[in-house]
Image (tube, rainbow, N blue to C red; front, side, top):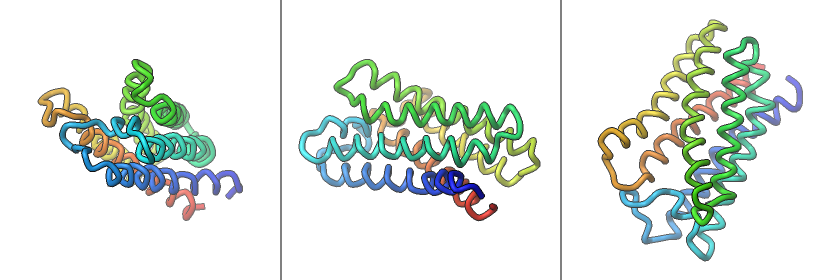
Length: 194
């Protein structure tokens, strides 16, 4: 395996670990945070250590995920147009994640737009990547990716359909967690398969 693909796969493992470490530490550092009433991004404008830690977690993990998209994911699934398109849209989602951290809630409406972009592009990319795996006869990875895309989209579909909580933190967390599990799983597969 080329060195850059190893670096890409390793970045894919590190990205979600860094993101969720910073998010959960930020939540722990701010006792007023409410899972039901807040958005996770509300943490990005809290003074002291909370805001900078939260924002760093997003743009640093987004950068690592971008490295994964370019050097780990793309070479692994670029055998057909679905794979190439899925990898490109996934890379765009990682750029949106970086932008969420850089343009926190103080930057309105930019923050809202890049947040929508991230949570929309990620499931779309996953559905395309699932198709690419199916065409390449990688049935298990196709099914895992399809289920992950569904798990990433479902909290938002339900949120807008029945608004099961007043704030966005729960759908954000569940959608992000689905993507994180998939990235780690695929990055590990890339490392071990090659």
